[in-house]
Amino acid sequence: MYAIVRSGSKQQKVAVGDVIEIDAMAAAGDTLTLPVVMVVDGDTVTATGLDKASVTVEVTGRTKGPKIIIQKYKNKTGYKKRQGHRQKYTQVKVTDISL
Image (cartoon, rainbow, N blue to C red; front, side):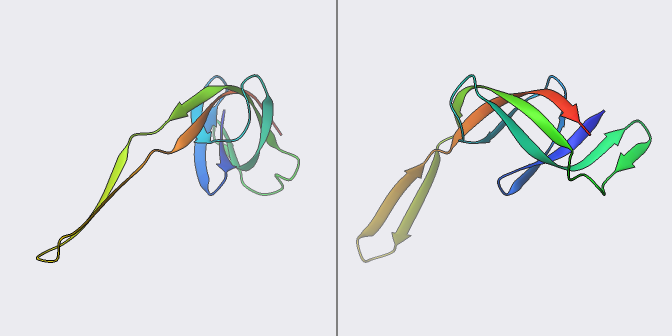
């Protein structure tokens, strides 16, 4: 059995025991519930009436994504600009999928 959950503006496919990365949220050791978009159990696909369905996750730690370099350059004017970004993520482990 697996579920499609929404975390922020992204959706991810999860099953019990999976470790996923979501946008930075809570501290380590906390438990969160993520809203369910769709649940697949064998041949049965449930996409409606999921108001009470939820996925319980446990926060395991924090990580960072890859470093992204943004560079701007204009020829013959001496204009150069360099900026970096590194997204912060929270690692969570899926503990339960309830309908």
